Length: 495
Image (cartoon, one colour):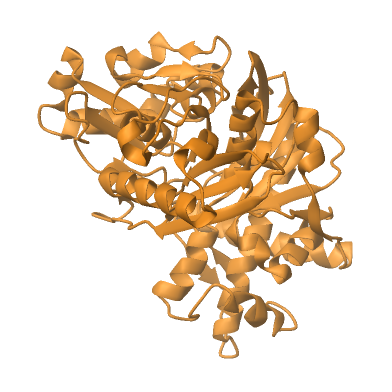
């Protein structure tokens, strides 16, 4: 008899629930778009209550579409947008403020002050992360200092902090569990990735009371059970993972040197470094890839803040396209980029630049430039920034790379995938199951529930749908990339 796993995939722009069978095939999906709030320039917020209600609706609809009930589900896995920060009342479960999203830049000055005071070395040594508004710690500090009465309540132990996984777990278990997994904890900038504990020195640095913090568990663990009132029957919650680490698992990148790159709202390249925590000298992040049955695997990660969100900007603000699918034909309609380059620093620049004050720029426009040139420049920027990251990875840890496994909403764009292969000089492999973030946490939950027996078995379930080989001349590729580097350097100098 077939066995089924329910994945909750709570992302930056949407909430999804997907039912997978024991052959790692998605059999039903329900998705709801998530409203974004921009109360000030550089600020990005979500309504955590909306996220919770959407999660319930998506789970119920996915079960209904699959023709299943809660009793048919072996386990739930939760994966989520990382770093996004929620603080809620322990008695009522009500958030004290909208969630502050990972893209938010409101704590730029706070982080800069810590950097100038010489604290980045300490922070990187303990967490593998750099001082940037991207991470949760400074967001927690801001909430405690700007929401009236919040710090006093936190000191009394009446508030709880969590990333979205932790908030959803609290609600799913009706407040019975306040926990997170080790990958989400590793992105808060409060967790020591070597001792695998909350770091007292960092709690003091960011002035965060320890009473706020959730329990930290492996990615595969007993996270509790859903309250029976939600789905008609209890369902065990057996896995949680931050979205990018979940995609690493979903792409079966279990061996050191294996690489996955996800192209969603932002883009995130992660290289498995095995049991070694490689310290980056090139402004990348050292992070926990996954921890299963007490065994920790580390990774190097580079983050691009705007990729899919740039396409949204083309659609919603410039009105150059009606839907994302049009970008492929528009880019392909041109013989070249016409010298047009777009630096998508809408919320600053991530790795390896880490320039939160940088702003977006389009260069090289002439009277011959068309909307298609801007659209193509937006897609090309994704590949150029991926090459930035890969160059930094190889400088940190020289290794021979086989292929890049890709996932996320943008990978359906064949033109972009071919340009990516050409720019990286590496094969690009697109999997048969595009929902690898949700699949990864389904693998983890299934591993804990006994649906899957080993990582080796999971590796055999991964399959490649299409492989893109490099086709253009290396000199042409290098010339395009050099033009990109000159363009982005001008943007950096201006900020």
